[in-house]
Image: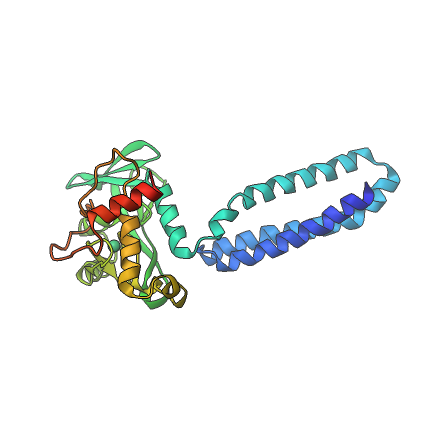
Length: 292
Ligand SMILES: [Zn+2]
């Protein structure tokens, strides 16, 4: 029993240490990374400490302490199980991961923006915010290579509440809200917003005018994702675009009506000259084989 517990105490820190490596590759900001890392380092130190103490505890047959140690082990296991249930996500590349995150957050949506205020759908609640009560709006953005937008968000402060409201690009129609922020908020970076919408190009994948610095703000596809590895499966860029379009325009049940390659978006306009590289028949065949 003693040996078994000592082995567990030795293996657990090892697992956590290996698992820590993933923190460096995550998409979180530095603050979150440091926080996660410190919690895990503390956990490792605690386990190593307990490992040294355990032999002594057994010797004293101190049941209360043994109970406490077993409780800690159980808790650590529970935490690890929670962490490891996300393991499947790590198998995806960043791009697919972003897509999953976006799909998961579909309940976070900007429903409407008008002269009076804006309405969001958050966890199935419709909430209206009046512009009159908005005292400040701040734009927060993080960029990846080539100034590709990683995350972008708006932070609102109100006169009738101390609570801040943060809305980021995981919200559906986020860019619709962004382009309709009224003038006159001192902290708001209107120049960035203006330059963003002025520099949008047509996305080869979805056909909306939403391609910014090498990535589509609507479908998150990018010509840069056609890497050497991808080239093995899709020798030409057209092959790659076709594959992405099959996925983008796929229907998820036999009864779902095909959108005729028209993306519904409040944020971006459709380029009328854009033509998909796949046919409706190919999309439906793909949907039947992969999604229905
Ligand atoms: Zn797109």
